[in-house]
Image 1 (cartoon, rainbow, N blue to C red):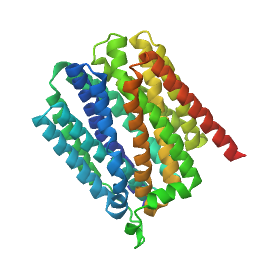
Image 2: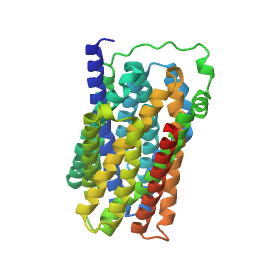
Image 3: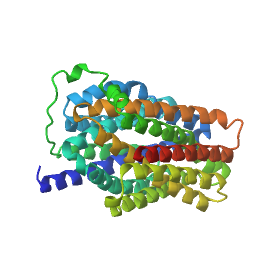
Image 4: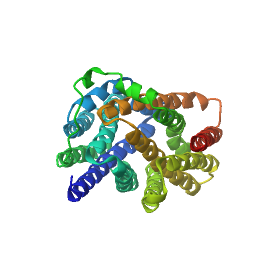
Length: 388
């Protein structure tokens, strides 16, 4: 593929990631604010997060579909399906309907995550993957700044229906831009569809991928613990209106944007493993800052560090997987890894509600930080041993 074709594909991927990310953030933040305003229950909000992770039990079966079929067509269909789900939610906004739609939305999103990771291998050569992913991530970070602010304004001045209509339009636009991508073909082995366990074999058989997934699981367990706490920390502990939750997410977006710019600026001097290490340490520091914050300004500093983590760790973990995996089974490899990652994150979100019954929310944040510091030091030790 010529350079012009690569640049065109990179531009289109940036547009699709921005639009889908913008819509996804608006949905998540808007629904969390809606649920908390309606129920004032961390348990109900926690149920929303758990419904996001339940697709883990199904996503494992989608890897073969990703490897077998045209990935561009799959992305067009998935974004169209998300638009339809938003229209369904316009008709019924009961808590259980929200849970069901969120479950289906995140089943599609997890499918898309593995599909896009596999698609990039078919669009860019492996030596360009880290750079391409960094550029896409940098521009996608703008959605994390703009979408939470937009979601907060919608929650403040409009009904939740406005949120859903905007999402429907954005998902249709995303499907259109995916249709413009030019994808190079990769020969598939004839026996490939029968190898349903190919993803697990790739993970277990490749020690580097296995270690990558283990540390990714530990990281996501901590994120699962922290996610349901945010809106309660803002409204109940810091005594701020619930729409500040969206502004807090915008602060995370600033952190993501800053981290993405840093990676692009230092591209030639950095490796995926180095940004993973930096991301784990920034995650630990972020929850220390949030845990001890006495005002919304200090909370925003912690949220900004969470944004740095949200760029560093996923980008590093995904790029390591893309580089190490075999192209013909990469869809199943990502599906298998996402299955395990979602289980660990769901476990964290299920546990945190019970932990809050016996611990102050600030103590919980400090405990999460301690787990992340331990994970960061273990990862650093692993990388140093590998060099030796």
